[in-house]
Length: 144
Image (cartoon, rainbow, N blue to C red; front, side, top):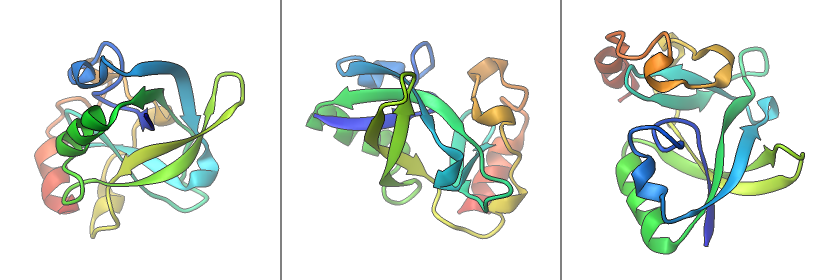
């Protein structure tokens, strides 16, 4: 089994959650600000990008334990390694326990600093103010 941290469409009740439904939900998780990421909107889904200490955020999501086949499916969905990259990061559960989880992020690319941050590092899907705002295509073009 492999632990992953999900913060967007793979979370429960979101459009791609079915991909990991065979996994074990370990609970809510938070990628601490010290990991130096900020969450940005690509319109229909979020991404994590590198950030300096001033602009980094605590990122809220979920911790899942998945089998190898599911992990490969998540890699495919995330476009790993050509779109998203991934690395292991320490994620805290709601009790403060540490979990080393694979976390997907956009590699450093030009213009990612122009992407709109997701408020509070919590993506709300269709309820998010930046969902479908048109930033998706511009974000993709600028991030690639």
